[in-house]
Amino acid sequence: MVKYFSYYSGDDIEIIKKEVFRILAEDGMKLEQHAELFPYLKKAGYNLDEATGILKIPTDRMKEALAATPKTFTLGGRSEGREMPLPRPGGGFYGRPCTGGHSWIEPTGEYHRVTLQNVATWGRLSEMLPEMGMTSFLYPDDAPTYAADVYSMGAMIKNTAKHMWLQPYEAKNVSFLIELAKASAGGAEALKKKQAYSLVNCSVTPKIFKHMDLEITYQAAKNGLCIQACSLPGAGATSPITTAATVALVAAEILTMLAMGHAINPGTPVVACPIIFSTDMRNGMSLQSSPEAIKDTKAAIQFFREAFQMPTHDYGLGSDASYLGEQNMAERAMLLMASAMSGQDIMGGAGQMEVAVCVSPLQLIADNELLAITRAALTPVSTAPDQIASDIIKNAKPGDQFISSPHTFKFCRTHLRPAEFSRLTRDAWENAGRPSYQDALKARYDKLMAADNPGQASPELVKEIDAIVAAADKALKH
Image 1 (cartoon, rainbow, N blue to C red):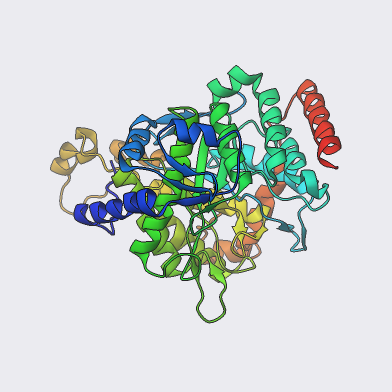
Image 2: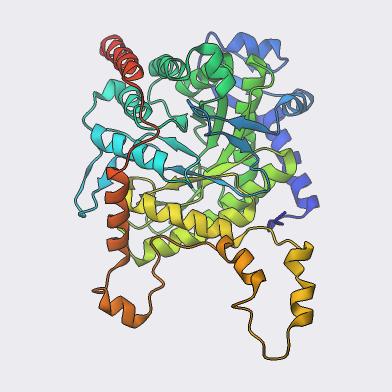
C-alpha cells in the first residue's frame, strides 16, 4: 500500500477533532425550515430549536452517527461493470468530470455557454474515458432555467451508464431528479441496490444550511442513496484564514450532514467533500489551485481519512487559468499529485478551468491521461521474488544489459504508454510536421466521438426520460 503524506500528527488530529465536536455541541448550525426533516432530528436526540433553526448535536450522538455510517461501500452505475468500491481496492482513486460548469471551449477554441448538446458530449466522453469512474452534469444555457438540472441529467443518462452525482439547482427539482434516477436504474429497489446515483449537498459556510440542501439530505437518505457532503468555504473570507481553523469548521459542517442522514436512515453512506478555496487578498477572488487552497484541502482530506475513516472526494484537477496553456497544465498537475499523495478517493474537476466556471472536452481527455500517469507513478512497489529478481542480478556480469532479458520481456508491458503525451525524438517530431499536444487531443476527441458509445441509453429508456423531463418542465414552470 502507498503511504500518504501528512500535515498533521496524531496529536494534531485529536486537537482538531475536539474542536469539531465542540462546534457541533456548543455553537451549532442554523437550518432553514424543513417540516419533514425536523422530527427526525429531534427523535435522534439532537438539540433543535425550531424557532431559531439552531441545531446542536451532542458529542455522544455524533459519535453514534459516525459509528453507524459505513466506512466502505460501493457506488455503481445503471448497468453492470461500472462499480466503484470505496476505498478503491489496493489504494488509488477514481476520476470525476466537472459539475455545474456553464461555459464551454470547443476543440476549435470557440468559447460559449454550455448547451444541451454539449452536455450529451460530456456524458459520452465520460463514458468512454477509462479514468472517469463516475460523472456529473453541466449547466445548460439553452434549457429552461427552472428545470435546467432535470434537462441536463436527462441528457447525461442518454449518453453514459456510469455512476452520476446529482447537483440539484432548486429544492422542488430534487424529486424529479430522483424519478429520473429510479427510471434509469429500474425502479426504487434497484436504485438503492445499484447505488447508481449520489446526491451532492452543501453547507453555506459558516454554519448555515439552506432549505434546498436539507431537502437533498432528506431525499437522499429516504431513498437509501449516498450523500456527497460538501463544504465549500473561501479561506480568509467565509472561513478563518488559518488551515486548522478552516478544517475544523468544514469538518463540523460535513458531519452535520452525516448526522442528519443518519437520523433519517441509519447507515446512509456519506462521502466527505471538503472543497476549500483560498481567497486572493488583493482582489477577493476565490482560487482553486493556489498553494494555500491545495494545502487546506489536502490537510482536510488527511483529517477525514485519519479521524473518521471516511471516503473523500475533492477537486483533484482544475486551474485558476481561463485557457488551455502552460499555467493551466502546471496547476492541475500539482493539484492532482498533491491530491493523490493525500489519499483522496475521488478526483473531481476533470476538464474544468477558470475555477470550475469553464470546461473543455480536450481538457477532459488530457485529464484522463494525467490521472493514468499519476496512478502509474503511485502504484505500490512490490518486493515479491520476481520483483526483487535476485537471480537476474546474480547472473549479470559487470557491464551487462537487461534490454533483452526474459525478465524485461515479462514486465515491460506493465509500463504506461501515454496516448497523447509525445515521446518522439526531435527528428521524428520534425518529420511528423511538428504536431502539438492539442493536435493529439483533437485527434483523440474525433476518434472518441466517432466510436460506438457503450453507455448509450436504449430507445425505451430515452422515451421514459423524455416523459419525466416533460412532466418536470410542466410542473416546475409555474
